[in-house]
Image 1 (tube, one colour):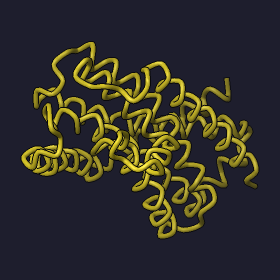
Image 2 (cartoon, rainbow, N blue to C red):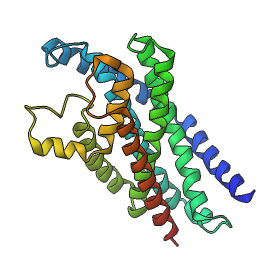
Image 3 (cartoon, rainbow, N blue to C red):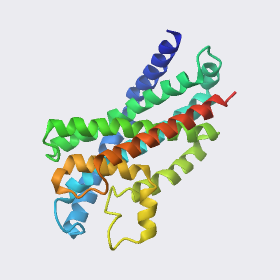
Image 4 (spheres, rainbow, N blue to C red):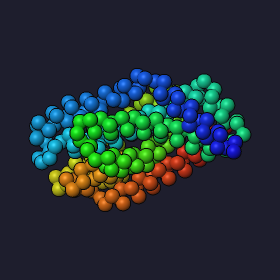
Length: 253
């Protein structure tokens, strides 16, 4: 019972912290709008994508970007908690380190999922998403994606001592993952260098974006991999990062 109460308390704390930061929520809405309207309209007008609506192609990628950037940024909470002594207090609490990690992970994942859901609703308003079933299916994939990316952010933050270094490292991780995932443009095909395709295959975001795009576009998109394969790779990434993150936190004194 103590473990469940501790997990719930940590989850609720992260939710309240996120909801009180109105500026972060607003910026999380404005950024996808800029990508969809300015970047999407500009590239579509330039005819980079020969067929189809580029905004429809771009939309799942922007959902993936929102989840990635929000999940990784939220990892900064570990450094804040360490700076103000809260991390020390919960580490000496009579609960397991796994409970502490899962409490923060579930809380931060919920925050990222809220941000991603806002983008999904934006897609519905713009007419990109018209089917409620598609909305729910994409939401399920998003839940899986947030677990892995939040765990990665928490793991990285556990090794870093100050906020400035975390920002640099996260940018170094985020940008390659984003551009290699195919979120903005196809990174697989006869005209794409083999090394770039290999790098994309090593990017966990690739499989999340591919799954979201299959669901959103249906028969209008030729997937890179079968949906079950994408989901399996995302789950494998989640499990790996959760295990690593729990082990890293368990070693903290």
